[in-house]
Amino acid sequence: MFEIKGKVALVTGGASGIGLDIVKRLLGEGAKGVSIADINQEIGKKVCNELQKKFGSNKVIFVKTDVSDKKSFEDAFQTTVEYFKNIDILVNNAGIFNDVNYDKEIDVNFKGVAHGITLGIQKFIPQYKSGSEGVIMNTASSTGTTIYPGAPIYGATKSAVVSLTMAFGDEVHYNRTKVRVVAVAPGLTTTNIFPNAGLMSVCLNEDFGQIFKEQIDSYKEQPAEIVGKNVMKIIKEKPSGTVWISEDGEDIFEYIPSRPTYKP
Image (cartoon, rainbow, N blue to C red; front, side, top):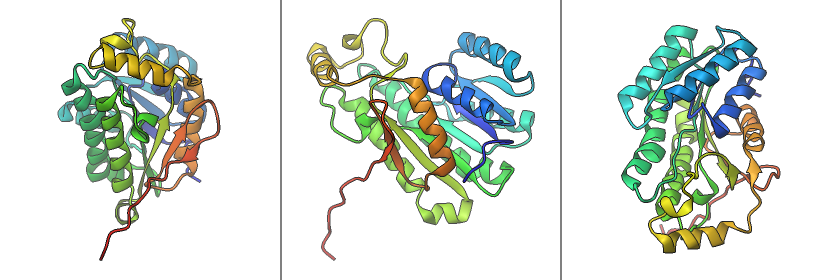
C-alpha cells in the first residue's frame, strides 16, 4: 500500500470542490507538503492561509497555475520541488464544463491533464520522488465512461482522461518509471463546475441543456467529500492504469470498457 505520510503532492484545481477536499485529506494523513495549483489566485491564497494555520506554515503553498499552459504547469512542478525538495503525487484535478467555449474546455480538461502526466512521468516524479513509487491521480468523470448526449464535448474530454490514464498507466510504463497512473470518475457531485447562470449557459444551446438536465435530474448528487475519500483509497491501493467510478455516495467500482475482438 502506498503511504501518504511524508509525501509531497501537487493538486491542480485545489482551491475548491473536490480538489480542496483532496488537499485537506492529504494534509490530514500526514503529507510532508501540498502545493495548491489553481488559476484563481484570490481564493487559492485565502484557502492556503487557512490551511497553513491549521496544518503549519511549511506544509502548504499556493502556486497560481494555468494547466492549459505547459510552461505554467512546469513552473508549478518546479516551485513545488524547490520548496519541498521532492514530489511524489500529482493530482490532475482541474477541470471546467463549458461546451459553448469548447476550445477552453479542451485546453483545460484534455491538454491540462496531458501536460501534467507528461511532465510528471518524463521529468519530475521519477527524479524527485522520495520513495520507491510515485502516483499520478487524474479526475475523469462518469460522462467519460458512458454517453451524455447533452454534454458531448465535455464527455469527450473526460473520455480522453480515461484513455490517457489507461495508456500511461500500462505496466510497460509503470515498470520503467515506477509511477502509478490512476483515475477517479465521479458521478454528479456538489462542486462549482456548474456556473451560477445554470446549465443553459454552458451547454451548446438550450436543446442540449434540456437534454442534459433531463438525464441528470434523476441522479443522486454526492458531496465532494465522498469523492475525496475515494481518491485517497485509489491513491493508496489501486493498480496503475485503472479507473474507478464514484457515484451516488456508494463504494467505488472499476470501469471496465468493452473490448472488441479483432481478427488477426
